[in-house]
Length: 605
Ligand code: ASP
Image (cartoon, rainbow, N blue to C red):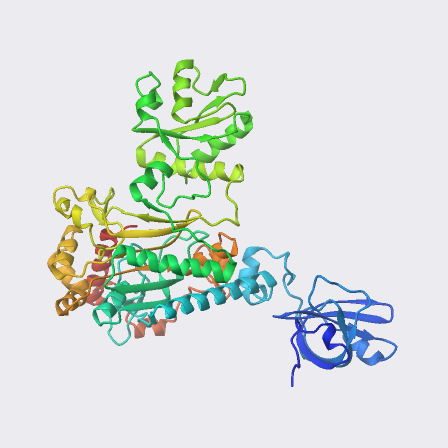
C-alpha cells in the first residue's frame, strides 16, 4: 500500500498513529541532528522528521533526496513543538521509520511553489511541472466544480447532455475553420466545429427538447489572453421557447453558480439593455456596469466653432473622469498615449479640467470660450474637480476608443472591484451588420438567428434596421455567453441565406440537411452558448483563460510542450494525397475552399 493518508489530511487527532504517505519532496532542511522534509501531494504538505541519532541510515538517505523526488514513507504521527497554525497539518509531523524512493527527479527548471521564478514560456514547455503548483491546481479544481454545478443545474431542469461530432462540415460562427483531410475520401476535408450550432438545432427537430453539452469548439482566429484556438462552451438549446424563457433559464444557471461556487446571492433580476443603448452609453456591446461614467455625445454642441478637428469629425464624445482635475501633465500625456496606441486608434485626446476654484483649463483653450466650457460642463453634469476627456472621429471608431478610455479611467479610479459581479443581458442586437471590406451585409450572430417579427418588413428595403432575437450575457464587461431564437421555417431560412449572399444552390450544398429537416416538423427553438473557460476565469478572478486550461496553446497557437503544430511525414502526406500541386487536387478541395470563403463572407468576424 502506497499510503494510508494524503499529505493534507493528518492533524492532532491522528497523534500516535502509524501512517504511510507518498508524495513529492517540496524541500528539506538539515538542523543539526535532524532533517526536516516537506512532503507534498495534491491535498497539501506534511512535515516529515528524520532523526540522525535514532535512525542514522535513514537520515543520511533523506539528506540525499532532491526536490521533486517521489518517495514513500512510514512513521508515527507526533505533535510538533513548533506549530504552524496556518496549515491544516501544521500541528503535527511524522517521525519517519521507513523510506523508499519511488522515483528520482532532475532539478526542475523553475521552483514548484505558489510564486515561481519560471517565465511564462518555460512554464508552458514544462506545463506538467507548472500544473503541480498550487494556484494552477486550485484553478483546475474550480473548473471541475463549476462543470459539476452546471451539470447539476441543467440536469435538474430536464436538460440532457448529448455529444455531437467533431469531424463535421463548416458551421458559420465567423471565424476560420480548422480542417482535417480525409484519407478515405481523398481531396475532401472535414471541418472541426466552431460550435455544434446546426446539430443542436437538429436535436430540437428530433424532439430532445432541452439539450446541453460541455463541448470543445475550434476557431482559427488571432489569439488574445481570453481566446484559445480550442475552447469549451456550455452549449444549450431549448424547444418551445421565447427569448424570455431562455434568459430566465440561464439567469437561473448563473445564479446557481454564483451561489454554489462563490456563495454570492444574486437576488435581483439581471438588467436588460438594448444593444443601441449599450453602444450609445458605453461604446461597446459588453459594458462593465460596476461603475457608471456614461459616454456623452456632444457633437452638436461643439460643431461649428472653428476648431477643425471637431468640425471635421462625424462624432465627438467624451466621459467625465470625475475628481481627476488634478491630473498632471504627465498623467494626461499617459492617457493620450493610451488612446493613440494602434489597438485603440484615436488621433488625440482633448481635455477640460474644471478646477476646484471653478476655472477651466483645456487643451483647446485657444478655440473655445469660457461660455463653451460651461456648456460642456453642464452636458456632462460635471462638478468642480472633474476632468472631461473628449475624443473625435468617425462614430464607430470613436465609440470603441471611448469605451476603452472609460475602462482605463475606471481602473485608475479603482472602480472595477474584482469581488463585485454585475451581470447584464444585452438584447435587441441588429440582425445584420455592414461589412465594409466586402460591401455587403453579414449576419451579426449567425445565419440561423431569427429577426424580430415587427422588423421583418424592413428586411428588403432597409436591412440594417432589422433587429434580431439575439442576446448576450455580459458580466463585468466580459461577454460570457450569447445566443438567439432561431429560424425554424424553411422558407425563412432560405430567405435569410439569400440576404447573406448565398445562391440557392450554395445554401443547399452547405445547409441543405438543416433546411430539409425543417420540412419534417421543426419546433420553435432557441438557445445560448457560454464560454466556459472565460466563465471559470471570471470566477477565479483572472483575465487569462490559459490559467484555467490544463494544456493551453501559446499566443501563436502553439503547444510548446508537445511541439505542435508540426510537419507530418511525406508518407502521411502521400496517403492523404496532399502533395503535388493544384493539378492533382481533387475538385472537391476547390469546392470546399470556395464554400468556406463564402461562410467567412456571410458571418461576423
Ligand atoms: N453557436 C453560438 C455561438 O457559438 C451560440 C448560440 O447561438 O447558441 O456563439
